[in-house]
Image 1 (cartoon, one colour):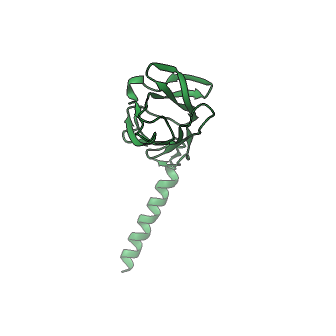
Image 2 (spheres, rainbow, N blue to C red):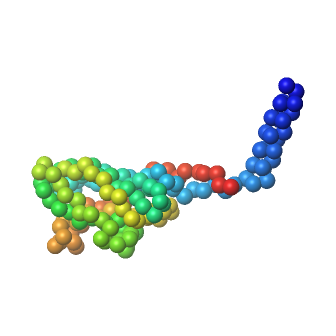
Image 3 (spheres, rainbow, N blue to C red):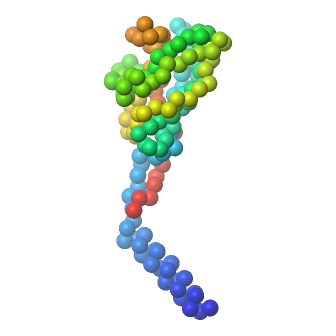
Length: 158
């Protein structure tokens, strides 16, 4: 019995020493499962509103977009993209435009859907989502919203 206690004590001491000698690094990057949320408000020129949530998946180079949109034009087909930057000062599209399947609103103008995107969203970067009026009217952005990170997750890395 005494031998067991000594062995357990020695194992705990070695584990503690390993943690002290290799303390790891806090990683404030958004880990797999991290989320960004976008609020899409209705405007005086467009009634489409709701939220879009982006969730980092494995592999880290992919992101899932979950849409909950309401009040749009029934049966509308809306192109959309994530851009670097902020609304009004947006930059390039994240990835390729072809990575983003068009949003198809229901007969009542709503959409509850998800899309798996081959794009990676990283921390400390500003992103916005653009929803365009139609494939033939891409210059008309009917909705723009900033992606807001839910939280940065600290991880222990050896």
